[in-house]
Amino acid sequence: MKIKALLFDLDGLIFDSEKVYYRCWKQAGEDCGFSIPHETLLALRSCDSTVARERLEGSLGEKGVYDKIRARRKEIMKPYLVSHDPELKDGVTGFLEKVCAYPHVRKAVVTQSRMEDKEAMLRKAGLWQFFDEIVCAEDVRRGKPFPDIYEYACRKLSLKPEECIAFEDSPNGIVSAHEAGVNIVMIPDMSQPDEELSGICFGVFPTLEESFSAIEPLLEEDGRQI
Picture 1 (spheres, rainbow, N blue to C red):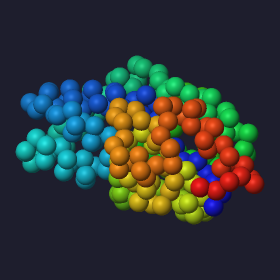
Picture 2 (picture 1 turned 135 degrees about the vertical axis):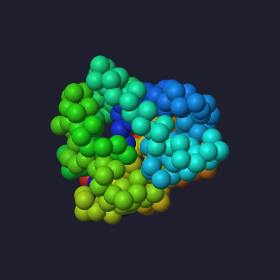
Picture 3 (picture 1 turned 30 degrees about the vertical axis):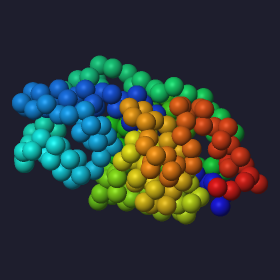
């Protein structure tokens, strides 16, 4: 099956923003009287709110605290986002420019975040023109790690999952794409994949741009198949 679309996560893949979420979750927990473990903070990346609630409250051993801590995290994060330009991950622009040589290959953002927030970031970073579609958490009932958002993205593009490659940085995103039947390239951000995650990825690369030589033959109209 030839590749007809590339699907991109945003936070931690396009933008170097997962570290900001990490710091803000950590500070929010402390402000609410809790020390959130490092592994729990990592597990909240690109995560459906229902799953995030279970993970956070299970880790802290206290029910009903997720909404309070999340609200505080948003309070901390909002002024930061207003006062700081979005920081791109290494190799993003170079990769997207190279992909433009294959106009038949569609490009979509598939993000756990809200459309309003991410459209502004993409426009500010000068990347909006690279993408054909934007799929966000509000488009589906369940977010990552459930497969809904990638299944919806494929339907929106009128493509089969196996005709797409998802680029992800976190385990939640990888599981979501895998369960939807989409091919996966991992660009690790705050943690490296374990053996199980590596096994379900087409490839693991330090940056998006470094993945291009591996996927380029799949983008050619007469190219090889995965």
